[in-house]
Image (cartoon, rainbow, N blue to C red; front, top):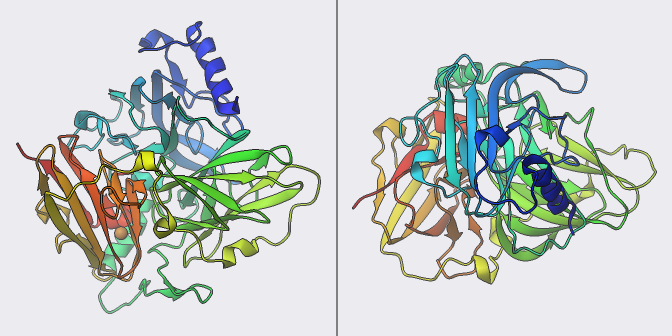
Amino acid sequence: MTEHSLTRREFLAALLGVAGAAGLAGCAGAQEVGAGPVVTSRNLTSVALGARLRARAVDVDLGGRTVSTWAYGDTVPGIPLRVTAGDRVRVEVANELPVETSVHWHGLAIGNDMDGVPGLTTPAIAPGGRFTYDFVVSDPGTHWFHPHTGLQLDSGLYAPLIVDDPREPGRYDKEWIVVLDDWTDGVGPSADQIFARLTQSAPESGDGMPMGRMDHGMGMVDGGDVDYPLLLVNGRPPSDPEVLRVKPGDRVRIRIINAGADTVFTVAIGGHRLRVTHSDGYPVQPLETSAVRIGMGERYDVIVKVADGVFPLVAQPHGKPGYARALIRSGTGNVPDTARPSELDTYPADVSALRATPGAVLPGRDPDITEDIILSGSMAPYRWTINGAVYGDARPLTVRPGQSMRLRLSNMSMMSHPIHLHGHSFQVGAAGGSGPRKDTILIPPMAAVGVDLAADNPGRWMLHCHNAYHAEAGMMTRLEYTA
Ligand code: C2O
Ligand code: CU
């Protein structure tokens, strides 16, 4: 029996006073997300079925420095929302912010009207207003939620959304959620100030040109557009890291979520190999590696057999200074003084190394429709485009229900772009082939990749770069169903 399933069962028993409860709890039985004790990944306080979420201004302690930010509840990240595949979930969101907000359930292929994109799928929630999201969760795995309004993603408004699969054996002793973030709120300029600065850069300034800094001789990596004053794991800076405790020899499932706005990370654990088991919630054929590269919006689950001692879990940003870290403690010993595990010097596993498990393969089918998606842009003027257009000018992609669709994504810029499609997952490579199933794919500079999807969820869906600044500067389009 894994810890998380015990936690969940105990939790449900406490919440509903019954065992094996199913169906929808009324609001009277609802718990408030973000109102519980401070949550660490050892303490997966969770709410299923009926939940309340407060988007609000809070002060959080970032390792001795208190900053004001916006968050879900009292903590950054927000308390994980944990449900079981098949659950119907109602989440009442109270907007206590001074501006409109929204919640997008990143990774869930739910009904279009609950997708949380103001102006497209779901109404914005006015300041002081409330909205109840009500949907059935079909997609197990490691997901997350965040606003789909302006640059709010670059505040503390994010939290894990874990969907347990009752059919999954769970061959591990313990699990942790590790949320990575690039942080500026209250420490550096606000997201709006950063965006204003980026969009005001003059063409001749050449300031902050993302021209492929070299990374340990491994080739070109782009460094994002923003240097952040802090990089966080589970809301904690490297100077005051979270300590993840475990018994030596235990196998831990680590659910890694990149909630950053502008930072690609490579994650490694000193002295350990990682066994990658899931990508964006979908199982992959287990892959042993020393490090994992993770773009914004992506999730990877890894299993680690923890040795005896104290080990750093480090997330190194691509082409930027600093690092984020947590500590894993299974025994006695001192905190290692080298911040940088040598595992980070190996080439990290990325999407090209992964293969879907047979059960995760999208049924093979030749595409009925193929669309080219060209990603390009510039720093000065600050403009990021899909097929040459910024969002307001973009011609939406169209598909008919039941069609199979291929997207040929080509990156014609020197920045990488994590491209996310709402309401669907896709297979990397051809449907029926061996590539992983995902909903967000990091496309390196000047690279191209094809993905196939099944048009099985009618509506109007966003397809965009998960770099918050690129999306805000126009790198978004829509996939729309026609009759
Ligand atoms: Cu994670 Cu359009 O979002
Ligand atoms: Cu981008």
